[in-house]
Amino acid sequence: MSLYDQIKPPLVLELGSHVFEAEAIKRFAGKFDPQPFHLDEEAAKNSLFGGLCASGWHSLSVWMNLNITRGRKLLESETGYSGPAPVFGMSPGVKNIKWSKPIYAGDTVIYRTTVTGKRLLASRPGWGHLAKHTDAFNQHGDKVLEFDGGVFLRVD
Image 1 (cartoon, rainbow, N blue to C red):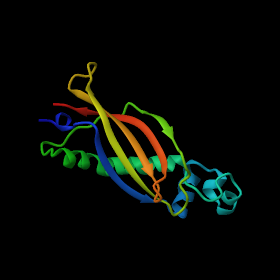
Image 2: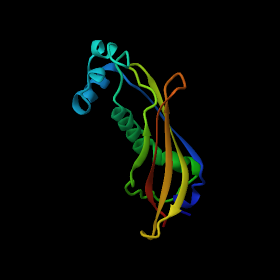
Image 3: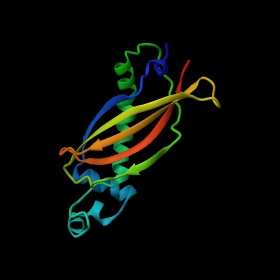
């Protein structure tokens, strides 16, 4: 039986947490999102956010790292799968990205992905699609990020 066969939605995967440190926030922003409230504490204090906060793209990049480094192993362990290494394909994309609260320097963010559905692909025999919803919460339990996405998975 393939990993795809063993997945029974909804399946919750606790991907782990990440501490957003000030220097890492500035480093990421300097390369990819150079807005003042991501780069400079003083400018951030005088912004709408009131303090240095991470780029939303930084929060998604951390999710991607946790998803790749832990997601497959979690799928295997949560389903009891012990066969050959599963083959994942590309993602057809993400949608409904919402950054509901800022992630401030020093915040710890906990990421959770839920497999919400699955279907075989008529256009690509031997492949299935896993629909997923991701949530992320800060150390106070406030939702800071959510989005919907998916991934292709070999079924044979």
